[in-house]
Length: 109
Image (cartoon, rainbow, N blue to C red; front, side, top):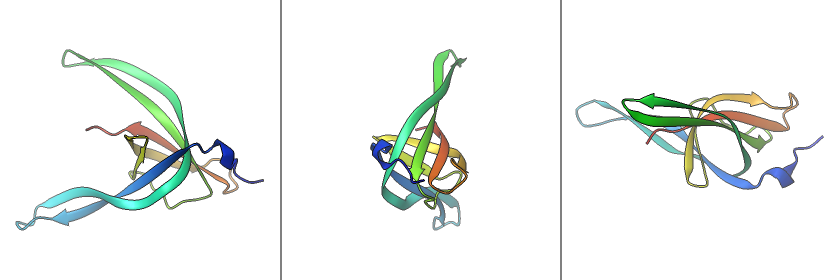
């Protein structure tokens, strides 16, 4: 069985957390490029709404699928179609290494 490549209709960039230090030794968290131009598929899973400090707030989770087993880890970030997501879980979707599933939340600006 192979990954259904015709279903991977979007392209993703994966960035990875790096820690640098300023001249005073204070750590600065940044995200640097890790993987680019990865074919993927983005599916909306569930959503929720809440009131926070008098403002309406909503969160929609996504599952992003990739062919094979790309080097993607929890807490990496994925950018697809201008939206950036934080990965909360990475699994071998089919338990055979043909598809990788990333459960994601939209990154806070």
